[in-house]
Length: 216
Image 1 (cartoon, one colour):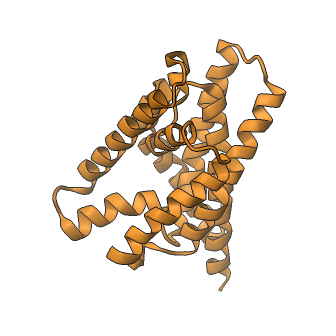
Image 2 (tube, rainbow, N blue to C red; image 1 turned 135 degrees about the vertical axis):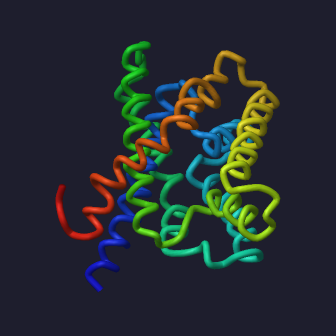
């Protein structure tokens, strides 16, 4: 029971911290991870708060898992669905208030902090193993059930589609091209290449010891 409670706590902490990291990414304006790239593009054309939009989109994605593989749904899935978008929205607006004129150096710091915090959050979330996000479930189900290609290629295809849709929606909204860096940019590329090793580092040095109730 104690280990189960730690898993739940790690799932909630992971989602909360991940929401904060999305706010950092958005304020840095160097691009966000692929799914958030799609969400940012969608946010530019649909006039509702980001938090509410995140919930609505993830409910749609949840239907995909309910139809194809319910084993991917857990406590973490629901916590992610209902909390992450609102936390990301709050943290982004807070950073806009406290850093209204962030210069290039400050934005670099925000980007680095966002990457590190997102990797820590992902390590907590994945190690807890109480379900995956509705977006993560899509590529897992496609790879495991339909088997068109190994998971890594299915994930790359999903990520690429998200980025293309995010950019397309942002441009269709009539937003200036100069604002495109908030949707796709260096941050998007960095997350694609460096998140894996950083997540594994936090898995080994933070998440797994925390789950086992020990320190390193």
